Length: 178
Image 1 (tube, rainbow, N blue to C red):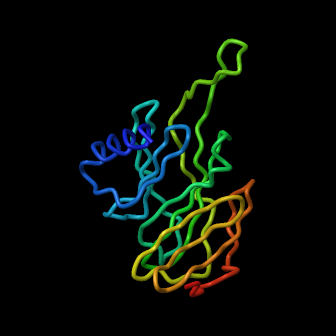
Image 2: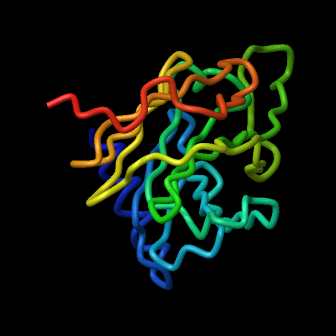
């Protein structure tokens, strides 16, 4: 909990120019942030290397204007690559990304040092939109991505845990579970 609070405080300070909208933190100390100024981008902050980077995606679907919530699959956190999901509340489209960085082994041990910056590459986006009003949140784990669309209902997508590829259409869409 202390690590989470410290990382959140650092991220907030580093984002001084852009208001953080939503964030998630990986076990490796990478924070993925959506910002209020959108712009088809996500921001990462690498706490180990004290590096911040804005990742811009020119190849998003035309109706995706920015991202409002972000999540990671905790089952992918032990790999050199982590699956990241982000949703655009305006369009109701979810996209998946591959978060990766290179490591170097230390002198015949299992210890590893991160040697390069963080990369965040678009895997793909859903073709079906879901309700996101009046608020939205997403969570992912083990091949299931859940979108809470507020009073608009819940939606569920599946994804491949190895590749991060999302299903195009929701298996449950805008369902009132209340």
